[in-house]
Length: 113
Image (cartoon, rainbow, N blue to C red):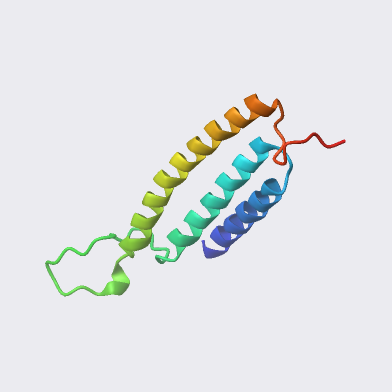
């Protein structure tokens, strides 16, 4: 499970960096989204991969922290997903306005030959 998650994070990061370095604005947006997904998976994996473990202590008995998942990374990832969605929407609106004004969709504003 850990190897699969590490490979997924690596593939998302590599693909995101490659797309961020591309000259077109749509590729930049997709690359930034992939990088944010990779960071979210990384933060989520820091909370220990526990299958079937409850994220919250029940308080009924003495709790062993090893039996529970860490809820903080889950809360951070949920917040990051919402912020990432809003940032992507704002970035798309700004890029659409810039494309309308410059009649070009290149990041640097000029067509490459």
